[in-house]
Image 1 (spheres, rainbow, N blue to C red):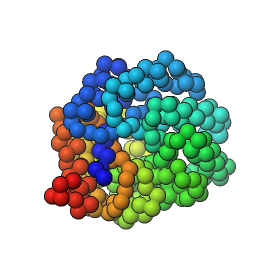
Image 2 (image 1 turned 90 degrees about the horizontal axis):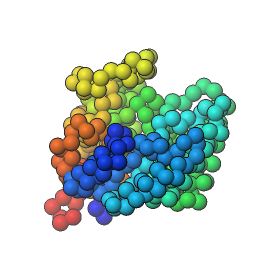
Image 3 (image 1 turned 135 degrees about the vertical axis):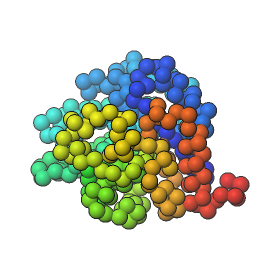
Length: 296
């Protein structure tokens, strides 16, 4: 089975002409799949599906027959008890959109485990409810680790929900940064995820954790990305093999993994190198499987 190598559609692609341009470039670059963040366009308004926009996106993706995965909108917070009904509505609408458009898996962020036991209990229950609904719609849900939390809480969530269609998405860039900040072994953490793994985000960085991400998030978000990349600060979303993550070692551990390999980086800043990124990741995966040079 050939690996499914994908790439993220930039959030700046809200102009349909820009989205069409990027999708055309991805096709020329040889990618097999595209991941789309659902808040790129107003697909959901106040928790309800915006039919004109979903219909438009449906016609757009039919022009480009990739495999598609989706990323939940950035505002979803299943620990927010005060506004839980609105978050539930947004998540349900997101699952419905994925089911209609054939997007799967749908990626959710784990975020940070809190001390509010009521919120944490609801967090698990909300994922159970989402998994049950998504199963009815044939949509896989995957929960992604972030750079300000350990890997184990994500595994614990997947185990607690115990649903065949709720698995884990491993984000290499987030885990690499977290390993430096929390002082754990990156490769050991990846090995722990393998029994639960169904989706991969491949982004690279230097391993320099930017502590503003924890202590002053507004200031962190205001730092110019060009400056952050130049000084290697934090989650800078480089293409795989452009930073310091040991991708060849990681790929060698994947065994019979059948999920997507989504190259999640700032596409706009590395546009001339898309085909190179796709080819190098594909070769790395095949080499990790021991299939290079065997006509695969």
